[in-house]
Length: 619
Image 1 (cartoon, rainbow, N blue to C red):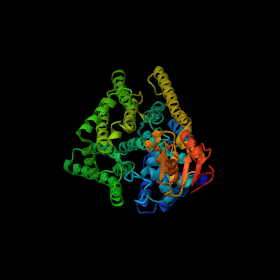
Image 2: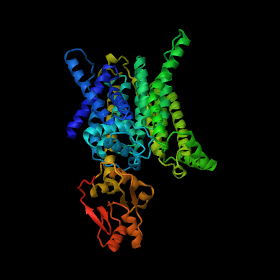
Image 3: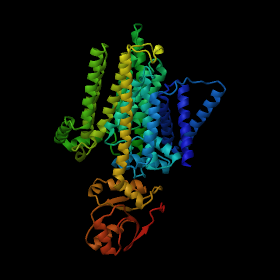
């Protein structure tokens, strides 16, 4: 059934992509645009309380669109121009398929998967609705559900598992990554296209803190912003499509995460810049008025889904973690005081100027490459370019993001987490990846402008200034392609290594002693974990809540040596899971219950634990 579900879902994706082509969406943007349209449609159904029906309606609509496209194409009513496959298409198809296979076999390990991102997908998959006040298993109820909706749609047809969720999010990322090839002036030039492939592969280096085998959205924010900026650029001569593109991508980004507002501002500024460039010498006042109306109108349309979400959160929940609230910010600031602000600020500066920091390294590498590229192209190739000017804007983006991140630590995060700059590299990876893509796209276009033959229709294998430049071009193309493949395989092997390294972690070991539960419940479950830090940070509790689909799961690492206390601690639960051998727990069971227990899943009876089969479905 999973195979047929995958086929059905894939046909729907192709159907939406074909429909986007019919609407004159750029071929390299059709995939991500079609996905975002589905997300918005699913969001509307979910907000109306019809998520289950909406998943079938939206997916079936995609299949019908594909059928209509085939019928109309057969009748000669509709025809599309296809460029054919290029070198980068082969790179994307082959390595994307290999990466998807690796992710399909990957477990979820990161803390935030269980505290929210995987749990929200599981809730929507098995209950068919967005979180309600009674669904206390969801703590971060203010987090918008965009990526979760798409993943829920996918797993609804392919089956719910860690692997299928990861594949769904990767499909979203890969579709957005494909959009960058729309910026190529000449897609037949292997050097330029492989430079963009290399950029995709390198971007995962700066995402290494969470990698692709997690459902966190920091990379998603960056790559969707890149796709949005690409669309604004390629739709310069299609103002209506550009308007809709900005609205769609801005709205979708705001539904990915609250912090996406920073990236929407970048999109808004670039859109305004492109609109201003349309001003001619006639009737300035009318043109400026039209620009302001168009710009504000697009942003307002894009903001409507998020405004609806904020109203929903305010009306549905009395309070929520990390919600956007002036009162919450004021309370946080008054609680930590000026001393807290200064201490956090000092730690923040130390991290920024720490050259061992991956984000700082990314900032420096980008500056060196852009300055080097500008100098070589200007003084060696004698071609003036704006790479240095662009670098100034990218550095400004980094600086502003530093300030916004500091504000988040001071205003939104508990002092104990803020003082350690919890998640700093993960958050900063978004802007590093964004700037990397923007810089690479600009560099590739400038490189193309330095080629000997500027007439695209006249370009061919012999259009080189000399045999030496041809040989140099071919060698450079081969080397870039080699490194693009090697770097992507490095990410694939790195994910495989991570999976192998994590084979003894708590989430993986839990799968060996019990089957996951799929019916929402309030069963009290104890998970025995010998790692105290996993208990004190609530990692074990969040994992157990997600796995057993309950909000009454608790992790415990320390057990009393007194019989009465030991029994009282244990017998307040209905079930106990022992994924990893815990010496103290085993000793207590032997001493007080006269049972030899190392690992397993047990039902708690008075003065006795009953072992349950690891393959038996309890819920």
